[in-house]
Length: 199
Image 1 (cartoon, one colour):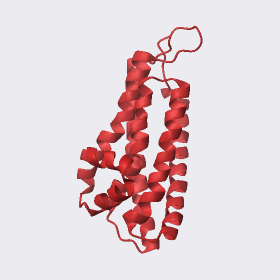
Image 2 (cartoon, rainbow, N blue to C red; image 1 turned 90 degrees about the vertical axis):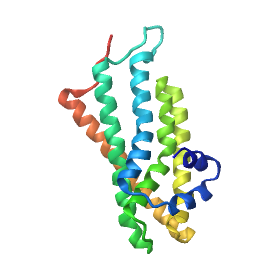
Image 3 (cartoon, one colour; image 1 turned 120 degrees about the horizontal axis):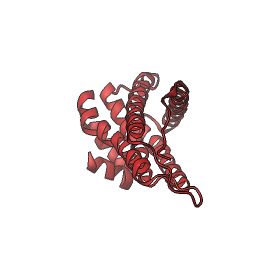
């Protein structure tokens, strides 16, 4: 896994070809890649919100209680795993339109590796500062979109112009999934399961 992560940052085009050539099952992909990468932002957020907190002006740091942080970290972790699965399934379904024939496991691998910058960017949650989060988050989103547009034509072995349309469709669905997760979060918080602060 690590060599693919490094390769996506150093020579993404070549790395996508190597990833496509691998034959993994969905369970192996999740156990060795997705579960590990998605844990980075969840664990970082737990540590950041319980040990560091947010500092607003001259006030003492605002932190979450352990119980609240555990609950929110677990829910965000499950949401990321579900998001990868939904994106993988959509890519697999949409591939038929472009005469590509990847397996579901390959599509989930593609979704996981495309989201790698977002997962690694989750390390910023160790120090929950607004500007740091915005800066690293923006950089992670930009590189994720770059990996999507560069990787999809190579990974699916389709022409670049079709790859652009395919990538745009995947990006649009990714935004819909993100909005759906945010809406679900608001609904759950409305039911009284929101964050609980220490002070």
